[in-house]
Amino acid sequence: GHVRHSTTSARVLVSLVGVVRSASQLIAMEIYATRGDRASLEQAARIDPGNYPVRLRLGRKGRCEHALAARELFPNAGAAKAAARGCR
View 1 (cartoon, rainbow, N blue to C red):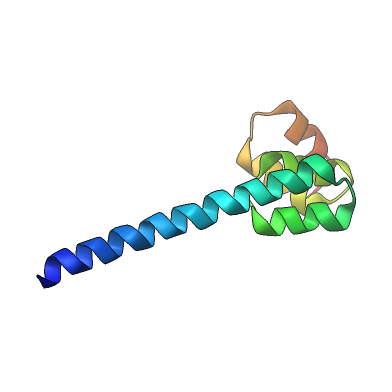
View 2 (cartoon, one colour; view 1 turned 120 degrees about the vertical axis):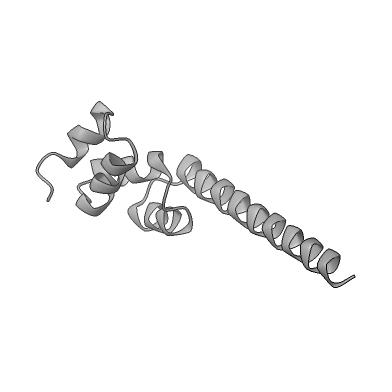
């Protein structure tokens, strides 16, 4: 009945969210692997804000917003700490 339909709809929605998230992560990593320019990396960071390698690369290019984000994602990582040194 109605409850079964609602449960099925909820499962489909959760699955779709997962597919979109996975696709976003793949797109961001493709950009990271094939492009090195700041604009492309900024786009990758917008697509997947939790992507540590993208944030770290931008942080190393002097983008404090991304250096701080990398440090927040991995607070004990030496590379993230080094990139964020001097940022507030």
